[in-house]
Length: 119
Image 1 (cartoon, rainbow, N blue to C red):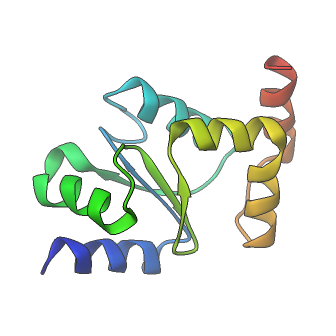
Image 2 (image 1 turned 60 degrees about the horizontal axis):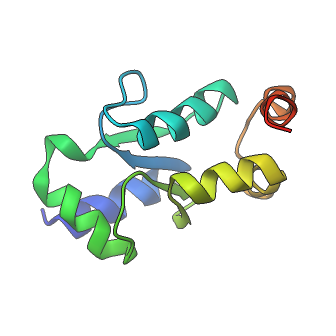
């Protein structure tokens, strides 16, 4: 199975997928840790794909999205962005909207707490 086929399967079969360095319980870079922390705090169920475990996936996801950095977040098969974009969307409330529009369960109170703490 090619990396592209694996990536397509992952983003098709999971509502929320994050390609990251490490895992959601043990991120291995600050940027992956920040996004995983936001998603975990908000109670979002997501599939984590450790790109450090597979060089083909690590390069494949960059080619697939035409985005040079990791982490990368996908919601309902669509590329959303990396750490800076997810941080901005969290603080603006856009991430709440994206999740709501796509039927992704999350803790609205937790999202509000993130904004309050960073306001």
